[in-house]
Length: 298
Image (cartoon, rainbow, N blue to C red):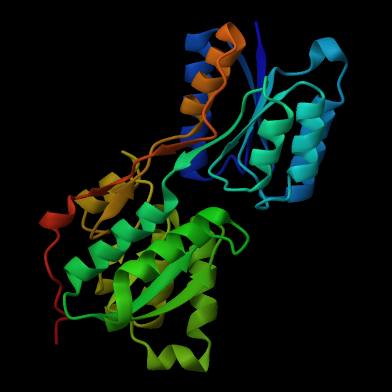
């Protein structure tokens, strides 16, 4: 049974848990053995984990590595060692330039990226803000880690869509509920925070939205009544939060590990080389046209 190593960020965060379930279910269906590793958000740990598999005895190496990088393009040396050993390399939710050179140098290997269209995620969240605040306003954005290409692309899409009628302030978390609370609590201690009472809180995932709300409620109870936006849209996460009124809207994004393993399986069985990039389309929940303007109560 072909073995695939799946390297993910953490076992704690809900979207990562979805990625694990998707990887294991897809591997079982396709006749693959999936070994899941968690880097606990630490790039050095992730590098060490992957090198152990790359440098294993030839018969014990995986046919491919599917990995979400804990530090942007920090896996380039690992990637080049992997493909040099004949191991396929599929990045999920990570945008890097070095994939093109590796594909040219190793045309017979499965080397690709699979991810949600992250800039479109930001654009959707921008349109959600505009639906809530047709006349513009103040947006507090709870972003992911600074080094993440997901964070960068979502931020770009949001800014481009909002335009000049919105003032945006941003703080960074690490995708967890606790980090959202810490990030907002730290921001509230700044003197500049007093000058921006948020009209909407746009969070780059649903977990951070929970923590952000708790921090704002602790600072000014009425601030927690402003609309919160999230992303991931899992049935037991963001979708339930929208139904409960805890989020004004979320963005539904699909797991990337299953589609990545589909590419690996096809390549291992038939030699079919996957496309350089596979983008999965996100969508708003509720639909953008169903989001009604919000007015702050006096």
